[in-house]
Structures are given as structure tokens and as C-alpha cells.
Image 1 (cartoon, rainbow, N blue to C red):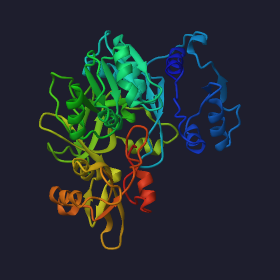
Image 2 (cartoon, rainbow, N blue to C red):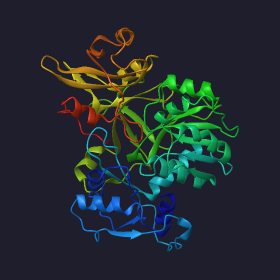
Image 3 (cartoon, rainbow, N blue to C red):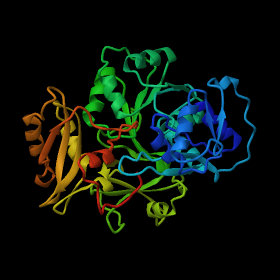
Image 4 (cartoon, rainbow, N blue to C red):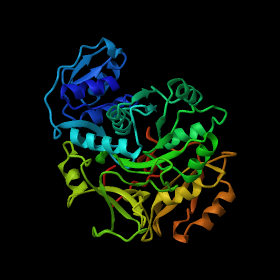
Length: 440
């Protein structure tokens, strides 16, 4: 997949990486969003792509399926293409965790601007070697793992899948100096405290989903490697803010300062809010997308007044660091009180008896919506421990306390580690109505 991306960029075309872990229907929905000319497949992946095209009623000839060797060394060199920064550089699909997926068009200039800031933020050099198990079908790995490292002159080690028992062994063998991860993978690493880490490792990067201070502290304590949290979205080419690599300052629970872009937190009328006030995070700068392919209405809604409206809720500190509080579309409206699930989830995840948790709004005849907490207990799985419920009551404002509790075996998450909100809403038969439709 990485060779396919690099080859497509070199030829002047715009790559559209596909997630073949999706079923034929979901993959077909994404294929239908993009006017594809051809799809590079191997003998192994051809059946899945053909099934997806059939799912949306397209014959194999449109787009054209081009079978290539699974060994990139056997490919012919790409023909040199003619292009400039305004040309399409990458199409990625939004996660769809809070609604339907969209096709984000990023230009070559967008990608270069973001990759340059990643190099600066993490002080990447030619001696660096990244270890990345993240899928190339999302924006993080192509831009952060691949482009930024190539731009710095370093080396890229891509893992086809994440296996905790092998991760540190590969890191030692390859001499990795940093790793590009997401919180669920860090959590799995924390369970391998018997592993020896490579002395070459400078930091572990965390992005794409919330990182709790407790997990950050546990991983750093277990392995002696700093965890550097950042924040990004597909519509801004991935990275928006980042913490410094030590000895630079870091603040657990905060996702760092803006990198090469302007960031504001605004209220409902679009006015900038005071420090520490929670509002919508908006972004302006050279990394912001051209738009959503085939969806001018959604593009206009997201790009307003020169700013990308992310749909994420957050607050800026006096020093300009950003804290993410959730998504505006996720807000639970309990009798007029708006509650961000992320803030409640962070409290629950801080309790040692909780392995994982998610909060969702469910229909209520009195309040409109009531707060329900789904909890994966650390001990017996039959019920939510009373200690957890008492802890939540002590830590949360009255209107933000869950009234309904359920113990579950797992929380549905996507490949990036984000809670699959749409699945939770469907599960509780409470799809959000009247909520804004920001980028996902």
C-alpha cells in the first residue's frame, strides 16, 4: 500500500487509499463517493474490491481494476507526472463514527504543509526511523508516518498489523526512534510490561482518539518512553496541534499548541471565547482541505468565513494549548443542559475498576434525553461496580451524572480508536435529531 501511494504521487495522480477491512457494502459506499479512474489491486485484494463495486452496481470496467504484483520491487518505474501544489494530493474518508463517511480532498500543498510541521514539531531528522502499525487508509499514517519521515530523510517501518508481543521485538530489531500509535494500541502495550524497549526510542506519538492522563502515565512509567499527544482531523491533513517532545513542555490531558495553523475556540455566534471556555474548535491555514468531493453543501457548512469548523469541542489555555472535550454533534441534550460525552467518559476512565467506557444519550419522556454509561468493568463483567457510580457522582456536576448504567464486554470503536457513536445511537434507538452536522 505504501509503495502504491508513493508511485501514485510520483506519477502526478491523486491516490485514494481503501480500507479493505470494511465489508463490501461499506467499501462500496466509499467507492461511490469518488470518480475513480482505476484501482490498483493484487490477486489477494481483487475479490474484495470487485465485490464492493458490485454492491454499488458498477461493472468491473468502471473504474478499471489493475492487477499489480504484491511485491512492489516487481513494478515498472512510474512515469514522471506534471503537477503543482493545487492538484489533488490525497482523498481520505472521514471515520463516520457520528454519521455517514465523506470523501475529503487534500491538495499536494496541504500535505506538504502538514508534513513539514510534523517534522518541526517532533524534531525529525535523517537518523530517525518510525515504526507504524496504523492503516494507510486513514489520514494519519500516509501523512505522519510516511510523508513526514520521507521529508526528513528518515526511514519508515510499516507493520501490516499490531501485535503487542512482537511490537517491542521489532522496535529493537529495526532500531526505531519513534512510533506512531493510537490510544487503544498504547493500552495493549501497557499490558506487555515484561517487554524490553529499544534504547534508541525517543518518543511514542499518540493521536486520532482521546488519550487519558492515566494511560499516558502508565505507559511512560512502564517503559520509560515519553508519550507525545497531538490532535488532528482529516479535513486539516491530520496534525493541527502537538505537544513538544521532551525536554519541551507537555501537559497531560491537553493536545498541545497549534502547528503551522491558527486555532480558535468559538461560541454559537462565531465569536472567540475566553481562555478555558469550551466551544467549537475552528482552524485556518495551509493544511485545510479543498472540500468534500461531490458534497458542496457539506463543504460550505464546514468552511465558513475562512475557517474550518471542525465540529470538535475544546478550550484554549492562556498559553494557547488546546484541550478537546468531544464533538458538538455528540452533545447530549438533557432538559436543555448540553453534556459532552467525552468529559463524562474521561471521569469514568480515570477509575481503576473501568477498562473502557462510553456515554450515549437515550430517549427520555421528561428530559428529552437521558445519560447512559456503558462500562467495561475490570473485574466481573456482570454489572457496573457501585464504587464507579459513586465516584462519578462525586466528580461530575448533577446534570452530567449518568442515570442509566450497563456493563458491556466491549465498546465499539473504529480502526483509529474512536468510539463508534453511530453504532451506539442505533443500539439505543436514539439517533441524534436536530444536532448540527459538522465534519466527522
